[in-house]
Amino acid sequence: MPEQAMRVALKVDVDTHQGLGQGAPRLMRALQAEGVTATFFIAMGPDNAGRAIVRVLKNPGFLAKMRRTGAVSMYGWRTVLSGTLLPARPIALSFPQVIRALEAAGFEVGVHGYDHVRWQDRLDALGDAGVRAELAEAFEAFRAIARRPARAFAAPGWRTSAAALRALDEMKLDYRSDTRGRAPYRCAIGGEIFATPEIPTTLPTLDEVMGGPGLAARDAVVRFYLERFRDGELNVHTIHAETEGMGELDTFVAIVRGLKARGARFVQLRDAAAAIDAAALPACEVVRATLDGRAGWISAQGEPRERTAALSA
Ligand SMILES: [Zn+2]
Image (cartoon, rainbow, N blue to C red; front, side, top):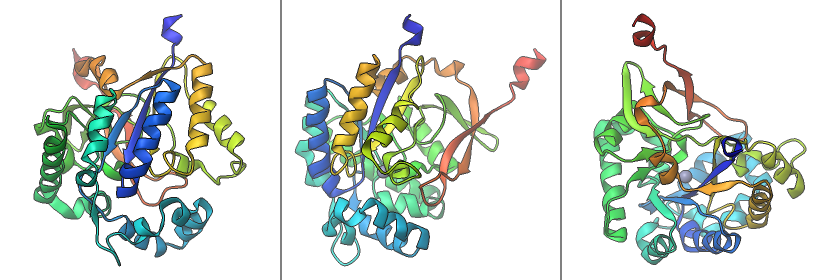
């Protein structure tokens, strides 16, 4: 029964220098060994991860999470200090060969912002011009490395705004994957409805799940995920080069094997986007929400707009 087929789009976010230099190549090899594909979104600018970690240290709830998830052992001190005590290293421009190798191997590669930390911490403060500058730098770096324009964008930290959606619409991308949600939709904020299809992440991330109640052991985490992938739907699972590509690779591979055993079909987000009839997508309000296991707000798919035009016709 083809309508029951489970589609899985793995979205690999690469946030740091170490993530692109070490995590992404390891994930690429693991995915190739399993015979599954994925879409990589790469932060194109400087690695200021240390600034994010300083922010985290100021938040008492998050200090516990840092300890629980072993952030220092996971990222290493070089990343933890990057952009604070040590200079920020460029991410994409340090490893153009990794980006080209991903593309040569048939993986999809898109843009995950320029300065990940600046976007995540200061999106609203950046204003229209600041958002456009971040996007211009990111897409230019991508073009210089990949020798073609990028066709997709994934917002750092799942944070977006009307200014960002407006600027991205003007770039006429094939799709965006900026938010958390249920299924593809068109973003609406206030009175505006944006044209570019949004393909949201549908599952929680491993760093949100790890260490939750009853989720200390790897088997429990794998079971937790396998219960949440849905038959007959497009499941978008965001993983991180710094997490699944480093210390949690075995957990990730166990999830992939469980999905393969259930007959999942692994797709790239660009293929999912190509199959979408954009005009038929519902327009849903983009709301700011919080998630268990994650600090601060993220952008999420809200309720569909009333189709008043259709009702009155
Ligand atoms: Zn990210």
